[in-house]
Amino acid sequence: MDILILGGAGQVGTQLQAFPWPDRQSLDITDEATVAAALDAGSYPAVINTAAYTAVAKTEGEVVAAWLLNALAPAILAAETKRRGIPLVHVSTEIARQHDATSSAPSSRARPGAAGASCRSRASRPQPTRRRPGVR
Image 1: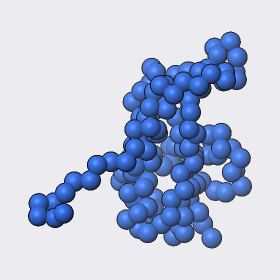
Image 2: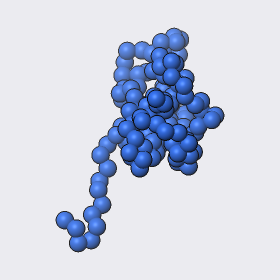
Image 3: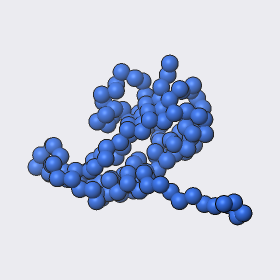
Image 4: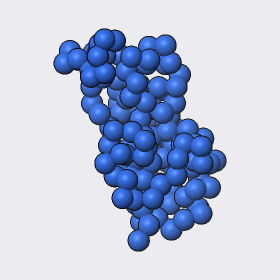
């Protein structure tokens, strides 16, 4: 059985290395056509996405990159897997933490306002539904 798993170079992904998966260069998950082609090329019973922009210290200066990977890519994956009836498992962290530049470890102080967390927060909010005329 083949399962498509994304984000292999990330924190969670490094723990899942027993499974084969494409790297960023071979599958850009921020591009809808590329994702569609990858899903069409395989016979996947499920897709697991662990890809995320987690460089908290860089996030404020790279808001677009963080948004593309943390908000747009999950939306694309959700739409494309739904279209094909493939279950999607999206693994994501909840809180961005402030990074101490003198240490390689994140500090314990949460920064929920960080751009990375903001991108995830916006992507996970329920979107308003549009009503069609004449439909209640």
